[in-house]
Image 1 (spheres, rainbow, N blue to C red):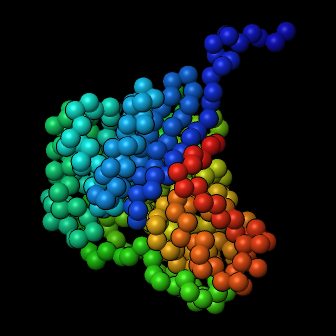
Image 2: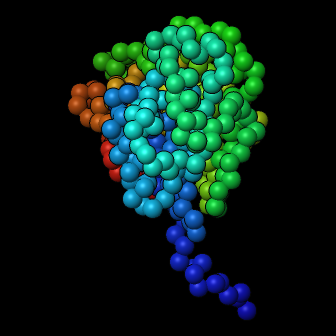
Image 3: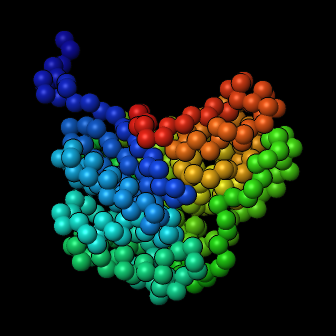
Amino acid sequence: MTPSVPFAERWFIRMIEIEVQKAFQGDCIWIRCLSEKNTNIVVDAGPSTFSAGFISLIEKIKNNKERVDLLIFSHIDDDHTRGGLRYLQTEKEQIIDKVWINGYGTSVYTTMQEHSPNNISDLTSLIEKKEIPIEYPISEGKEFDFSGGKIKVVGPTENEIITVAEMVKEVAEHGSKTYFCNIDEIIDKYRPDPTPTNRASIIFVLEFEEKKLLFPGDSTSENILRAINTYYPGDKFDLVKLPHHGSPRNISREMIRQIKSENYIISTNKKVDKATFKRFIEEQEHTKLMTNYDWWTQGYFTNDDILKYIDTNKIIMQYIGDKKIIL
């Protein structure tokens, strides 16, 4: 005899909704896990030009009569943090239950290079003033459990966080302007991202309903590989957010081979270096790349690229815009 299932439990919808916000060159991703208790995780807040967009996102969650269970600042660069400042300064009804951030409490972060906020202490002070619980530093092994799933932090290590605090160097660009020629003509040489703040990015895996999603912030291929090989060796991921907006400095061939995913998010309004595409084409049979901006629809791919890689579904480009990704 088949065991009976309580009536109410039969009607729980269990799925993941992901909205990749149009945060210009930055990141802001809303993850909503639906179960008997819906859970909202917001990853990053975009740049200051996204302030209104961040407030609008919080309003959507509030209108659902839900809360932000966890706000994760993957790292402290401007394009991941400053979009949240206006909300924290002006909103009276706070619906954020917890914040994770790296960088607070380390004096070097108050005198950062131009790409990272000089006022990171102001951000954390605002969070504390609003009496929102804040946790730092966030390193490998930390977990956040929620209804039906969990977030497992797989990087950075404590040593990587300390290293960032001790050496702040020149910031690498998100990519180069190598996108005018055919993909086949690209001279591909991997140059690892040297930026310490990116190496301190929070790398986490969200597990829900037997699905695994990887969110590496702007971390490096080397850190991502170490983290994955330590905690998820050989596992396949249902979805991966590409690090550092698709920059070839953060996406090595070895990372593509070992992550074992066919579904990726690129969050940026800028054209991506074609070296990134070349690596996916040569390392995988098929790759789907979901973008929140349609920078690739007008003149980015040459006729040769389209015939050899787009028309054959070697590379599947999907413009998601404001639509939800449903898993």
